[in-house]
Image (cartoon, rainbow, N blue to C red; front, side, top):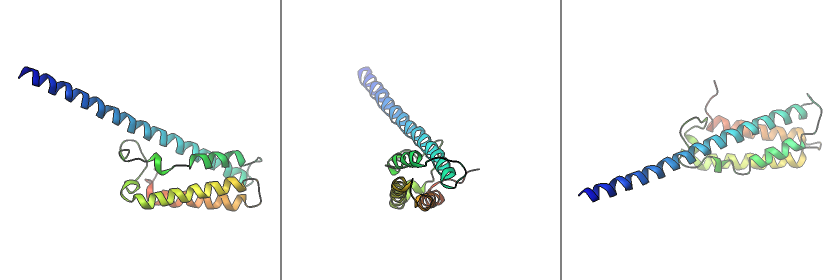
Length: 145
């Protein structure tokens, strides 16, 4: 009897460690996602200032960064990362197909902006990207206070 108790305790401890490890991984995913989105927002603001003529410079570097950070938006929101300090709405997971469609649209718009960043179409492509971001935030991001 004593031996079975010990096995149960050990097994419970091992399972608790796995559960804690999984939670830590999910928390790391959330931190990663928040950091990527903060960087994305900063590049959008910088590129927007250039495209709108508020500051001089080329938006190309920012556009490439935007393209890189949109490569797998949906992948930054895996199952199990719907808790804690996140601005993501439950719809990210409950309406996954729509979210993935919006994420792919943003990825395509970011690539188009990167391709046109130093050309005559830069402002129009930036506007398309900005509208794609806003559409996704409307349905999948909690309102900011």
